[in-house]
Image: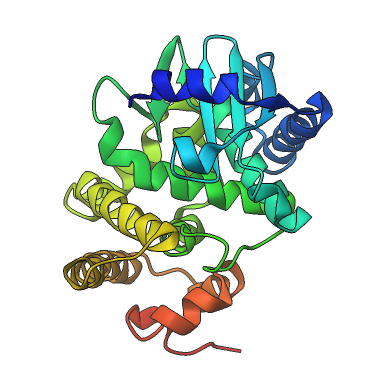
Length: 276
């Protein structure tokens, strides 16, 4: 079943929710980027006028997840599963913020983009990074951090938080919102043009974390996940060594989730100890 077939089934069995729920998330996104990053509101505003509609529908049964976003023309339809609504409000706010950010960022000049790359080109290569960045900004906007019990993006979003600590939120936001590839080009110059290879690894590990979250991994998939994480850890560790920043260790401890630090500090050398 393709996305359009799923969409038709979801619409048939959906109940429309209060428009203010997503309107508040749109306002929060614009306020965050205007107040903290400030340069990207024009690009964000191009999608701000679109209609965002929230529905409750059997998403888990039809799509396989608790929530899905369908950006069609000037309307962004977001479907949530009834089971999803039983979660705590802070969790719901982050996830809905995540989907609203997709709706605000993905379309540029009538084309769909994933972390600055057209879907007509290498969309699938960048989906893991795009999801990680979306969740990172959604958490920042809502002031909430989700654990691995709530969020299969824990690993990839914290990898992007490391890059955010090194290169700053503005460069990442410029690529995410505007399609300005300065961030990626900067990483490429430092890392022998391996950012796309990193993105592919992020896509693969994102897919495995998601599968594990909703069902389970086979022993072969567990080993594959560990190997991919090892490759990403090596890439990130090497990048950190090439970017000497004063007090970077402390910055990382403030930026990263404690759960991530506890699980990966021995695998990314810079996190071996906190400098007070």
